[in-house]
Length: 433
Image (tube, rainbow, N blue to C red; front, side, top):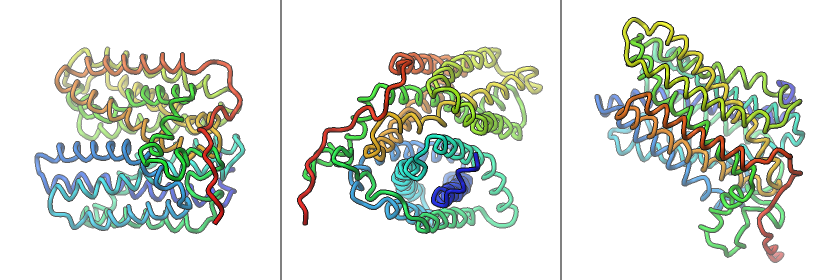
């Protein structure tokens, strides 16, 4: 897997991703403490609103940025997004009211919605061989999982020495380091989203409306059957992941009566399942198709949620939960593994389904639509769990995952189509100046 790091450009980009993720992880811890300072007992509602703002920014900003930024060189776009995020991190320690937190979080996530799709779209060009690209996807998944485990430990070490507001300085440093690493390499291609005459970014012509260009990538994404299947698979991942992210503390503390220290252990089991798959999957994908991995994983999410409904049906208990505690750890590891089996090959599937010129718009659309799935799953896991109980919430998410997996099965035919499948209608070339 590490052989792809011999490519200097990819090595610098991957390192940029790792340090930016580390900075984001520090910001997550610091933001929770800042919310408690500002709102006290209402800190949970502040963080919930901030999470909703994050998802709204992800869903709404990425397609618009793809439309506006189609003539901006990608290196310049990535660096501008990193510098914006660093500026927000610099401002967060000085806020004095909740509305300022919301404003800065929106700007921060808008910059992330700019950075991530552009970053994802350039990797297939840096590593054009599918063998190498597969390993890059696994490394990326591994970086996300490692961040979720390492950042809290790193933050705890910092907090043992200084106040939590210093964590924001660590966040700023991570984003600045990411920008420096991007500047240090020459990226292939020109402007973000620019391509040949069929490039998605140019849909609608030079005088086309912004709304038309913003929706071009989404129209392309929804017009290709395999990408509609990918969207359904993203919904299955969100159904399982939302249960873990939203209700881990409820399951561990409320259902099983275990100490607070066991909450990160459960989250660690989820991350460990995902990391294990990320390490093993490249060799598997050398032998089998993406479809043979991703579709069974979606149905596995359904089975795992059904098993979780049985575990939670016994109701709250004291004394640690007996057999239900190891069962919960196994289910969390299984959901992490199933999610990684779907998310890791997703970039391969997207690259094989659209022409190279349309990749930036397609990645932006996938970024926006997949976070729309999480925006649906989060409140379902939280509100239904609080009002109807965890078994009802788990069954509802299981039904959602089953519908998504079935839709993906029907949308993705067994026979693999040659690539590329489809491009947006060509636009006239601009007159030479």
